[in-house]
Length: 418
Ligand code: EPZ
Image (tube, rainbow, N blue to C red; front, side, top):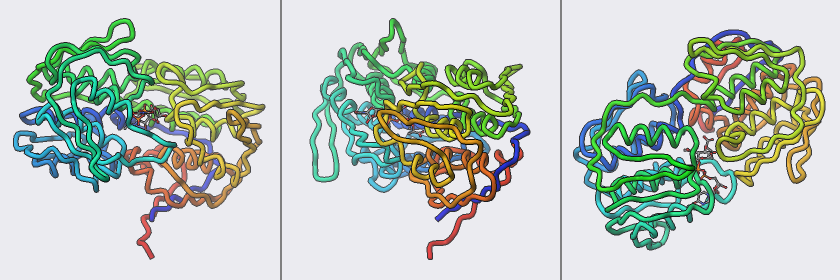
């Protein structure tokens, strides 16, 4: 059991590095299993989900490891197409291994993926896409078998699912002929995957909001540097904003931050970017954000919604946040209420900003909710204890060190199970 203790009430001041993007590197590592050869990905964050991906590659007969931000993978001896239930159950992105294995072996067996419980999180868009590409999908108890020689086709996604788009892009590289994805995810992390696959010999283009993938590619791993993590950066910017602080983040640009930059300016923060260093200066007190609706890119990202909720809980005035991507991404609300936040859940989250939160004992239920509680604790008066906080290691590299770099008072304790 992991516990995070934070002493709040200090303005965050300082500078730290932004790591490589979890949600960009995970599909790239997954795509590697479709390729023969040895791969290297730079700027790879040392987080639990990367470790789980390395474990899956080893289970499949390959070899992989992460050292000083350099992910190495030897895919030459991969000889299995069954994704193990154990590691596969730890994270949602395990399903993205399907595309490469289906391409390499014409078959893959896996379980419904694990990961943060944010609602139903079905995988129908993935499976329907594989069927349109000519594969057969069979349920075998807890396991799912997808098999078939892939033939390029036109696939219209009923929702721009990030994972399904990424899975189908990877699979389509191995299909016969061209595939077109309509209504796909165009998140920066998806574009980073496309750039990675094209570097490895793929022929993928984005045109008029659709993705065109040429098939029958004999992809070979090429060294690649994964993009910076806009969600990690946003988490730290929100922390500084809600403590009236001023910080700088190395390795991130205004372009990476997209609409998040505008939201922070709208709340009264001053932001500037010089040579890939992004600086924020917070006002004495943040202004409320009238209404923010979470949307697929380029809309406000769902992965920063919990952190935004924490930040706006101390802004002056009333804010409304509409979470439209995950119907169950609200477990942080009850915990923020324990810190004195004034939030009611109607169609959206109605937040009446309070002057300050109070330190409290709270519990985390998912990765970004855990980050949101850390932000609440940093902005609160007094001490907070966040229980069940192991989630933080899934998505934030060196979280404790970085918060200390930024002037926060934090300690992360790994308690043995009693
Ligand atoms: C990816 O999850 C990210 N994870 C999530 O980040 C992120 O919140 C999400 O995209 C949205 O941006 C990784 O990249 C590893 P979706 P994914 O498929 O692919 C529904 C984090 O905190 N849906 O775009 O699972 C689904 O239920 C994590 O870093 C279907 O209905 O997200 C949800 O309501 C959390 N059928 C919506 O689409 C499907 O087959 C968006 O899901 C697939 C999805």
